[in-house]
Image (cartoon, rainbow, N blue to C red; front, side):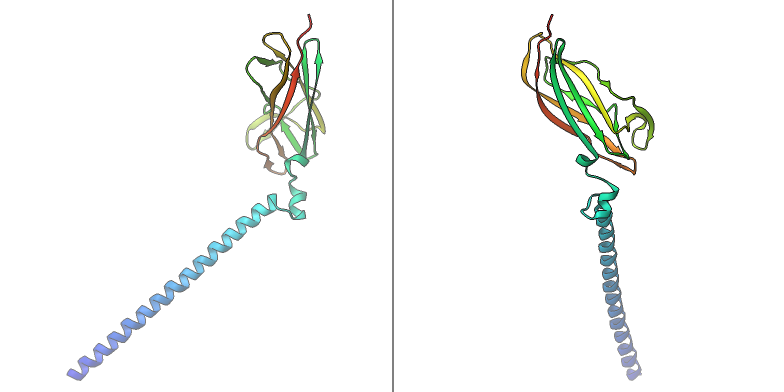
Length: 189
């Protein structure tokens, strides 16, 4: 009977040791698989971002950098009513500029007339903002007149032009800001 007890004890001990080895092997294999899947997922995500913004030629053909998709130039000239500020957009085909995202920021004591535009905006159903007016034309100029509240001229007034555009292929560029300094002419009476 003692021999049988000893045999059963040895069988149980080797089974427990084998089960521990199997559990350890299973944990090790599971961990390796999980690490591999995580690395593959991160690589796929990085490849997706590279497709949007990378340096390869396929990415460049799909989405242009903002300064290539839109060329924005401002100019100003003194008039009898103040200073006429013109903001010209050269828009690459397949892109558009939001009419309502064109803004001006300037110091207290300066004001601007509402923008007038060289082209008419078209209404689109934008995936981000819904139904909005945009400019899809190749060239659009927005103009406004800047004046001082005290009726005197002002030199080197900091003005920030804000705007935003998108690619019709599905990329909305972040809002852009163009900083400039403008001399504001005193209105003539």
